[in-house]
Length: 315
Image (cartoon, rainbow, N blue to C red):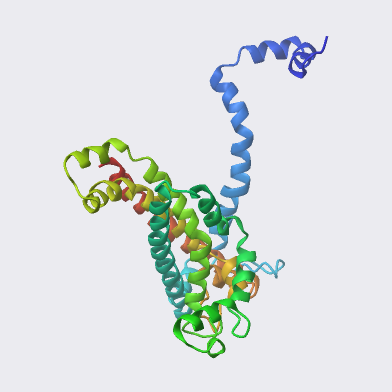
């Protein structure tokens, strides 16, 4: 007869230990199983956060571990908040956030609205549309770098075909005015399917009875769209904005592959600037304060936004 591992373990367990185990409550058993996950969470997330906060008040440099570590108080925070270069990177990040979220929400909702209509090849088109979000950001960055090449890039040839402009007369990732839009276009191409899927879930959660009641009241399709579809999908749209806002605030690999923060510093987002302060200039205490400011900014804005989202869901 085959013995299961649990039965075999129960047989070899000493009787005193077995009595203790049998005497445990369900709550105690639950804590036994949850404790390893909590320990890993504290070790991987909480400790580094507390360590970063402590380092932000010091002049510590990781490339000089033998130097004395002095407590500098709020000096790092004062230097960051008074640095015009930091505010320039914040402005570049705000530009990137605003336009990527706006364009992705508009296109994503439009695609979801079209796909929600049953037609032949619906599943095929859905699969094709979501393909970009399955790729690595580094791969997408290399892919769009090739597309943006002035001499052989397909993007320049497409723009030239539509506008009559010479494809070799401009460079999307080499021009100061066009480079910010180059990363916006690439990120939109990659992550619009994500917004589309969230909006599609919202559209398919709307009860058909609402539209049937509106038809009985002789409401036009346009009125149904604004009084039923948009209000019902609005929480899903806001959720998509929250997810994309948090992700794009810490965008790094896609932009590094495309522009590296250039030309100059017009596409140097806060994440790229933070990496240079921490791992190129080795200003560990300074970069820790920088990271804390970014964390507090994202956490604070996200908390306010979540409260607004909950109020919309309660209506």
